[in-house]
Image 1: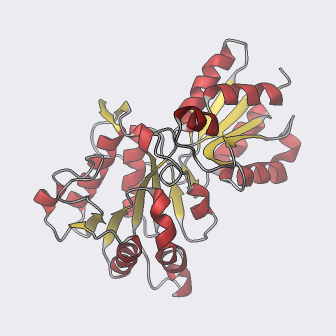
Image 2: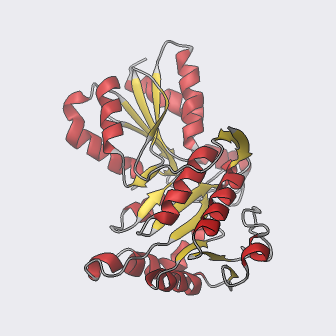
Image 3: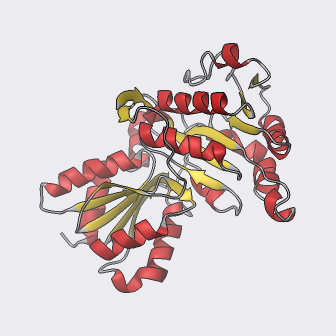
Length: 325
């Protein structure tokens, strides 16, 4: 095992895949000469050349369209948006082309591309740079959506995403980039669609992904002091969804709290709540509870932003509500 940051784990995954397959290319704003604003592709352009590590103009619609075309022609592009908030100007290549091409050509054309982008609140980046937009992509058939929380998961899942023949949206919480954790030495792959139980428990299931996994774990430690044994299930990928892992956990604990950093209204937690209620109603001892961000624009002021998205104490409160404690 070795201890590295999440950003280094992502960098290693990209580097290893570029060495393994010459069809893997990287493109986006400042990914080449600058080496990414988080230093993830630092030195890549010198090693692999400008034809494989491509600095693009500030035109998301343009280079997303180019990415889709490159993937259709046999390359495996990994494109980066500097912030996921910028996806609004380039949704057509993603939702109308990449997501639908395999279906509309009867499987004759694949689009093996990965869209990497940082997202997340808590960095005081204000309303246009602090959103969590994973639910946008889970609504579109044909896209796969990954939200890793740990360095180990980020590396293993990104390698799986690059090798996948479908378009994958790979969302990285920017406040996790500097977090150091142990990962295995050597190559490993984590298949998409496999959730991970980050903490075993018997009283209630807390379902989370991305940075909220850590908040869920903090909440579980606090709850344990009061005799409440919470299980923390990290989905890791939202599409494909590991329904078997969800079902197994719910059937064990019979109580559920879903936590996510995106706004509550129409968030992915609502979809999960509906699925659990529809298919596992007889297993539930109480209604499913959601903990999510407020339905407002992410504020810039630190005190307001901290009140905007969920914290461990909010999860503790929700668990106690579900368990009538």
